Length: 457
Image: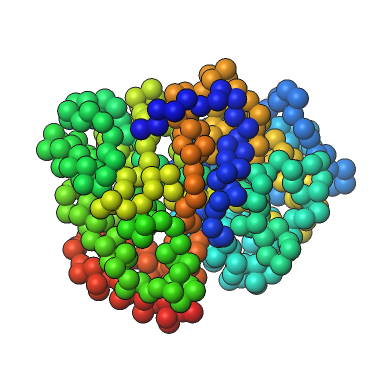
């Protein structure tokens, strides 16, 4: 656990250090619930001191905003709806139609839309390798001009926009910049007689067995959305490799997936599965439902991004949750090296029929997002600078704890699917998902990965 005191004031560039130390090449408040298409009316009052960008054309315009904030209980959902309502009130000729989905639904739908070149006016995309195919297909509009309006570019943490840039153009604006942590329920740890958070993988494994013996689900997960298992696995690989850079070494030809560090990571991941760490039927539970196992007090731990801090504080385990770094594995790995998750981001269709109006709205939305998230006590882990006194604003001990972890970041790795090409990433996601169902020889898993990588260079 972090015992070091944090400064009460946080410029949530919470981590210029995080951004500057990130290896080149993420997910945000996104894995929430089943999808729905919404239509917003003009119901909100103007937020105090909000910056605005007006559209002056006078013509009636509908802008479709595909998003991944479907859970009404979360602060991000409230942020989205309050800002959309405000914009519609101030710009009565503009209607924002929300196409709201959970993360995996949105990814699938966007791929289908991209195939027919029918991208919505605003959509969601993940950074680096995941967004490159869309950029190469010229489906996204460059946003440099819009970033230069109203000082928007300067609101982002230093270096963060690089993950969304190609050939000098920025193509998407991130909603977050996160680290992956282990959230834990202090009451359930106490019930199981666990007195401290694990510092080593062996301690984590023993805690899993202790919790399981007490009838408590040790680690919440929803592996129907396969990125969740991959995120956890990558924490282990970051440790068995002795630090960041394994995937980059594979890309550079310095290592293969059959390297001992990767094989060991598979073995340790399977140790968790075999010890009963996860809910029964994990592959039939989506990410939202998996998270709710923790947020409803039915699981002791949840390995997930810091974007969930606000949602946890809005749940029934508020005040009972803490967070700690993923432990070392066989003495390897620095706890202050994290899985890094530059967030999902807002991109604009290059073929939008209302390109200028869409840019005007997104400029307004992203300018006001940090202030609104701060008001909703959800500013920890966003990708823009927020000046504010967390303690004075009533932020929870958990949020201040997470802020402290950001301040200790020495570097880390990006998610597998933000580093490798999509074909190799899909084999990886399916391969890790399969480990929840059956035990597999780790050398075989490594060979599957290497074969996919070589076939899709």
